[in-house]
Figure 1 (tube, helix red, strand yellow):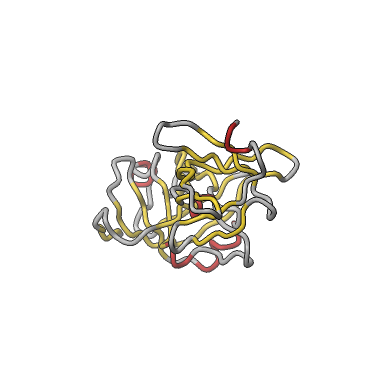
Figure 2 (cartoon, rainbow, N blue to C red; figure 1 turned 90 degrees about the vertical axis):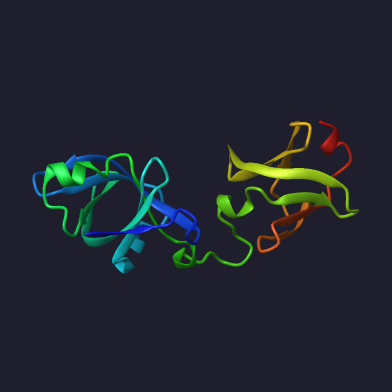
Length: 180
């Protein structure tokens, strides 16, 4: 079954979102929210997060992939009715169980809310989101206190240092970039 967790529990990373029930035995069809679907092989428990933020731990009995979705079978939820209670929930793992990326690569959520400053110490703002513009280019959408946005290309010549532990990014913008 499930064990309730406090909402303030450790940070988590969402890996799937339940969209509907499937079959008669309590299976849940879920949208994948991870770039690493093979990770389900190493997961025995998931954190179920209700739309209202309430968290509980559930046992993952089985899983398989069907089309672009993952089918989850949770232990103790063996009917359409019991599994249906999870529609709209996100399923997550503790942040400590995230897939480790190669050095110099970051998850979007690791960059969001980072403070951005220039190499001279001028505060630019904080990262609101990471935007993909095609061709493998990513842009930091940086918002300042006046809600003005700056688009900062994620290229080595501009983004000098990223410290996700300190939530700080240092940039060396070319002339005119911050005036746009």
